[in-house]
Image (cartoon, rainbow, N blue to C red; front, top):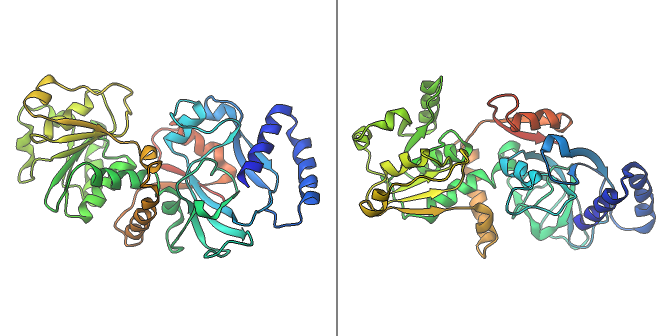
Length: 372
């Protein structure tokens, strides 16, 4: 079980003699169990919180015995998400107890099964559902009910990343307004993966998207990229400095729902475009500044402000519903109706991928670790 590996990791942390312990523990494990054993697992671990490039290290964890309902999964791929970084830093609201293995979502191939497992076979592709801590390792053992079988024809990198960003986009489009074909939404952070997913999922439902991007070199190319994904309108922040911004919308209906992942004054541009009685949903704060809202937005436009956190939703009684939603999103991927840029990086180059994810090497696509 995963708990056995965690216990081994805690012992390693306390004794600070990992090589001797792991060697001895492998011998003891082989002698102690006559059942099915997992292979040893190479893992990215951290023993205390701090900057990920300073507190993480690669170690080998010992084999564990599979109990009756356990499934051993050979991981294929797992992304490095901002929330993974925040957990290691110790600033994310929900995080595992240290010492811990990094990572939260991913995809793997079934390696072996406990004797009571039914409905799964070696070679099947599965994702942790709901997602769980510890996906940055080569083998994971968890109970069957914590794995969701997916279509093996799905591109590996999309299977590995479907749970956090695309599912956030889908839930926000469904949970805060009764959107119908022909309606509009507005968002900032349109170039983020969530933003790109919102554009494409909205288009698949006949919903128009109005997108706000930062003023930057190459903004024309960014606009064209978003329009190829299905964006109906793309504006830079400076273009929305006009008093009569609604005149820019041409024939698009005023949006009743907006999404904010930036915060600060950037959020006010979303509010500016919302119609009377509209709602803005905040799901991120990349500027690290509080949302600025004018008094008139409340009094004269009767706007509502909401928040969305996927992990809270997945911890509710609706959590198991997400499996059908994940299947729906992956079907869109296989049809070519949902795509976003990623870079697959071999596990052996983990720290290069980490530097890219931390922004040390400039703007980079989503980094996805490949364990093959």
